[in-house]
Each structure stands twice: as structure tokens, then as C-alpha cells.
Length: 622
View (cartoon, one colour):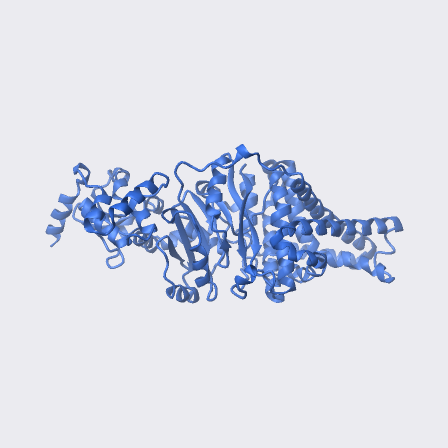
């Protein structure tokens, strides 16, 4: 039997000298497609960087198994079922995992001197054969489904891929190297300050007040600068319209899922509204291996051909979103890579807008951040305020910050990268619970830029009190971690970013963290409005007191103006009466901040998951 197989593969090997009938003609002859469908697919191929078979499958005119069957006949290659007969592990030691991933191939079987390599693209097998020419084997291709090849690579190199996912970012820009003492340092410092305040009350209150006011000024300055830049923006001239690339690129989208019983089915329906060519879509649902809940949910849903799943193995007990995305990053096939969350509802033409924007900007723009909005603002008061907050940030302040060339803290979803640049940056810090903000800093340190793209993704506003606190505490803990990591060497950060962007980083992180941690200090000033004595009365003169009251009012007016501008569009105007209530929305953030500070010392890498699927998308529509 082995002798027979050897002769078969030896005869099949020199396929390059045969004149092959085009795949499309073979599919028509078999009756799988009509000549009209073939003609349409060939026309599509003029503007799409996709193989003919992918276009036909993406349009729903043919099944992928029929394409593979026809391809096997056309090339006279043997088909391999890698699920039924897994590859021999030791054969993969010929090359590192990066080689097999790059070419989407895997050694399958050895028959004497012949090495059978599973490939889904025999037309590009020449590079694989050349790279393996120095081995003792005669290399011969066999056909296999690309997803089977991916699964085989995962199976053979599981431990290697997981460790790489956890350590992609250089250690000097990652928080994974934190020791227990380093994690507790900020908390010990605060306890020391508390003892100092108790021992020297006057000096302690002075320092506390100065720190609280400084953080307020920092964040107010950032918001004010973003507001002014937004108001003074110039609309692009007609001739600056984004060109359409001659051939559209393939786009990969990562959608991390974890214990998503409610949201998975709705997610599939939302993604099916996308208008980008299906042959160029590569949407990957990223699951944790131990997440039986999401796997069971997805088994009840039929995934389209352009959507697939990847399961991330568990190794060291770390199950964070950035770790999962790092693992899946190696299996992406697109030139552009984006991220959506489980509850996201992107605009149908979002990817077209991203592709056009990338086509007209320079190579230094490696990331585009879209706008986040909410489809359930009418659920209750908190959902209205959540929507106002995010519209203020994404539609006004962040737009201005990006125009000023400052560091853009990415939003965790609806951002799109040039994939080669993301790989160059090392992907995400697997241990950072706000991997998005950290990535925004790291890309700026590398000399790259982020721009805002004119497209919106709708999410579910977190409208319940305790889930809101948990989500906000995770963000604040991540901001603390990100700031401490990048300020390990402040002078180096200053050199990397330059003075303007360095100051922007200070304003964002210190301002955001400080305004929540120290908000109770500033609240004490409002005792005077009730005619009650305050603890700061003995240490500040009257003129300083009134100056501070003026500062607080200026900050609230700034927030009010930003909020009104953010919801001034017709579809969001119903939120305008709720803008003045925003000062009542943030006090729970103080609880979240101190929860974050405690977790920074006790459990810095813990991912406090936000529950999704509690509101209906239709609430946004009506």
C-alpha cells in the first residue's frame, strides 16, 4: 500500500509542467456554477484581491467543499482530511511555526523520501518547495481546507503560540514583569501620604488640595484643547475625497467572545449587514478553550463562509481579551485588521470607509479609530448619561485631540490597523486590562499616528449601577497600569513622544485617574454653598477660594458645552435636556476608582467582564 501511495504522489508531483484548464471552466463543466455566475465573478476579481473560488463562495453561488473538490481534479492533487488523519508532529520541526503560518501549510505525512505538505493554495507552493529544498525530502503538495490547516498548526504548536501570545510586547513596555512589591508600590505610597496628612494636617491638606486641583486643570485643559480644535476644524475640500483602491484589500476582523450566551446570535445577524465584498471579509470569532457557554451558543448558529472561530488554549490561568487577540493575530489573512466587541453593531459600509481612508493617508498613519455610540440610550437615565459621555468623548474631544496630533487612547473596539505595523509593534500587552489605551501610546512612541475615521459602531450602554462600577474600575485600573508602565523611564518617554504628546499623555492619564480618586476633595468646597464650614477654610484665603469656585464652574461649563455639541445632531437631540444632569452621573466613578486601586495591588491582571445582551438594539431605532 505504501509503495502504491509513493508511486501515486511521485506521478502527481510535477504539476507545474501540465497545462491546466482554468478553475472557472472546470466548475462550469461540473455544473456547480453557471457561465453567467463565472462572468460576474471574473468581473468582481478585477477589483478584489481574492481568488476566484473565494469570490464564488462569498457570493453564495457554490460551497467551499465543491471548490476544493474541483481544485483537486484540476491540479490532480490528492486531498487530505487533516481532521481525520492529523499531521505527524515531528515533521513540523523542519521549520518554526512562523513559516507554516506565513504560507498556511503544514507537513502532513511522510512516505519514504516524499514529504506531503498540506496546502490550500497550490499555485503558490513554489516558495514552500524552495524553502524546504535543503531537507532530505522530496516535497509534494496535497490539498486541504485552510481552516483544517489552521487547526493543525494550532494543535502542533499550541504551547508555543500561547506563550508567544502572552509575551509579544517587549518587556520594558509591558506590565507582565511587575513584581508583587512593584504592584503594591502605589498603594503603599498613598498609605504613606495618609499618615503624613494625619501627622501634619495643614501641610497634608495643602498637598491634597493642590493635587486635586492640578488633576482637574490637566483634564479640563485636554478637553478644552480638544473642543477648540474640534470647533476650528476645516471641512475637507471636494478634491480631497478618499479614492477607492484599484483592487480592494482583504480585511480581517477579530471579535473576542467570552461567556456570551445572550449576544452571539444577534452578533451574527449584525455582521451579515456589512456591504464589503464577502470574499474579502475574514471575520474571526475568538473563543477561550474553556468557554463552553459561547461554544454551545455558536453551535446553534450557522456561520457564513467568511466567518470562522479560533479557540485560545488555556495555559497559565490568564484569560484576557488582549491575550486572546494576540493568539488569533497570527491566523489573520487580511492586510487591514480591525476589532469589534461582542455587542457591536457597525454601520454596514464601515469597512469601505476604512479602506478609503487608509488609501488617502500616509504610511505613518497605521491606525484608524471609529466613533462609538449606543443603541439603547432610552433604557434609563444612566444609559442616557453613558451615551452623552461617549458622544462627548468620541464625537468632540477625541476628534480634536487627533487633529492636534496628540496620543489617541484607542477605544477597545472599532479601530483598524495596518496588520504588518501591528505585528511590528508586538500586538497587544496580554496582561493589560486596557490594552487599547496602551497600544495607542505604544504606536505613538514608535513614531506612528492614529486618525479618526468617519464611521460609527453602536454598542450596548451599561445602564445598571454595579456593572457600570465594575466596567469603570477595569478601565481605571488599566489606565493606572498603562501610565505606570510608560512612566518607568519618563525621559525616554519624553524623547519618544516629544513635549506636546508627552504633556497630552500626562493630561489624559493623570487627569482621568485623579479626577475620580480625588473628587471627594473637591466636593468639600460645595459645603460653602450651604453655609457650612469646610476643612480648607483655614488654609486658603478668600480670593483663592473664589478663584477655585470659578475654576470648578469653568470646568462644568466646558463639560456642558462639549455635551451639548456632542448630542446636537438630529438623531441624538432628545438627549440634550439630560446634559445638565451629568454631574450626578459620575460620583459612582469614585467607588470604581478605589476598587481599581485595590485591584492594582491585589489582582492587577484580573479582567472584570462586562455582561452584555441586557438591552435590545431596537431601542435605538425607535
